[in-house]
Amino acid sequence: MTVIAGTVAALICAVLIALIVLGVRGRVVEYERGRAVSAGMKVAEDVRRRPVRGAVGAPHGVAVQVLDARNNVIAGTPGRVSGPPMATFRPGAATGFRNAQVLCPPGGLHGCHWVIEFTVRLPSGEWRVYAAAPEVPWFVSGGLLTFVISAGLLLVLMVCLRTWRTVDRTLAPVDEIRRELTEITASKSGRRVTVPENRDEIRMLAEAVNATLDRLDAALARQRGFTSDASHDLRSPIAAARTQLEEALLYADDTDWPRTARTVLQTLDRLQAIVTDLLQLARLDAGAWQDSETIDLAAMVTIELARSDRSKRIVPHLQEGVQVRGDRLRLVRLFTNLLDNAERHAESQVDITVRDDGGVAVLEVLDDGAGIAAEDREVVFQRFARLKDGKARDANGTGLGLPIAREVAKAHDGTLKVEDSDRGARFVLRLPRES
Image 1 (cartoon, rainbow, N blue to C red):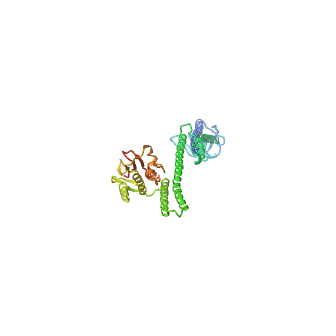
Image 2: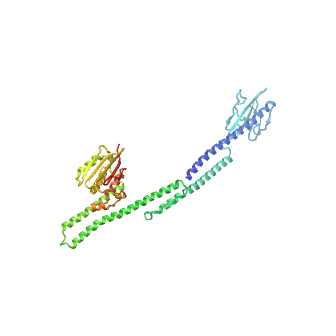
Image 3: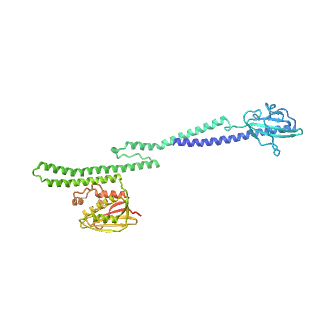
């Protein structure tokens, strides 16, 4: 910011210096040429009244020469009384004098001069009067150039210092936020950055950082809870299988080994189901995504219902042409999880509905069981969360089916909720419909 401000200030100063120098030069040029014109006209009037010879007066720095009809120098300022003429051009007849010319240099002089010529008509012929003033350099004078450049540099320095102080004072809260963030780690979660009192962009940044830290703490809490629950659910079947095998080995002769093997296999089946669900959740959390395709929900439901026999009566209410864009395998997993859950809790029937709701694709799975209490409608979507009724109906459940279904819905920019129904649990999936 300081470099940018200094650069802009330098450019502005450069333009101002150029304008000042050009303006002053224009005034000085006008002044110097005016002196030459005045001196030349005065000498021309003297020549017209009486013969002029020898030295003539003129302002300091202005050179004047008088030439007779034979182009002989007969008068002039000191140093110009003799020698070659300063110029040879002649004035126009209509104006009485020719427009001035810049000669580099005029005769007998050094450097460029602005020269003007006057004609005086006498009985002896036409006499000429030349008046010359030094050309003003582009910088006018060394003193002026030094002054304006020094003033410009001083102004740029002041702008840089002021900008540096302002930026440093403005960004001090940002530096404090950065320092506090470097101290906040996973082991020190719960800390928050200081929110400035001024209601400005820095305060908004601090509030956004704190909100991010809130979400981070919530995610860490969920991760810790998930890890704890996962370790518990994984440890239980492992411990059960180990206990069964140790007991069988202690009484090897009295053990029914085929029965023990079947029991251990059932335990391993539960362990495999948990691991499979955990891997599925890990893929969803990592955002792993397959190529999406257009899926007709009614056709998908019909195909999945035909794949396997169900213990409860399935009643489909399918509207054709309700299409969504997504990963077919994941949507099938979502549907089968909802269907397995509904079949587990239904008394005798499960209703499946596919319909369009104002441009939104809706998939409903409704069972005729006891339903879910209002306070438990979000609990069922927590990982490893299992209600008492669910444990009683299926002791081998993992508690990950519904959380996986909701994560799949989120991955497709949709929602999955438990909504009101006259009887049973009504799970409603809403996805953006493909137009």
